[in-house]
Image (cartoon, rainbow, N blue to C red; front, top):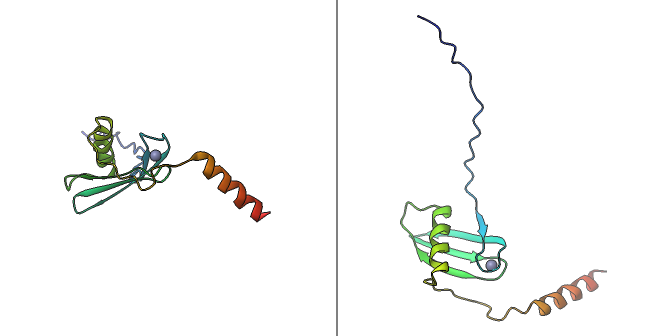
Length: 104
Ligand SMILES: [Zn+2]
């Protein structure tokens, strides 16, 4: 009985890459960065400055931590440390304009 015809090796695409950026629930941009250290996940949005620290079990990876962060954020249970409280978009634009003017 040697009908081993099941030798079809399907190319399995393993993606070990854990996404390192996530969508921000506040500004909607994919610029959430998560760093887990000592059971605390540091969640930072590079776009709007949203920053939070949540406790996570050691088994959590970035995606897990993000899920927990999202849940807590949506439930309003999260402590959000805002480094810059008033981000005025107009002001930012002016700065950009000035910078580009200097470059030219
Ligand atoms: Zn944001």
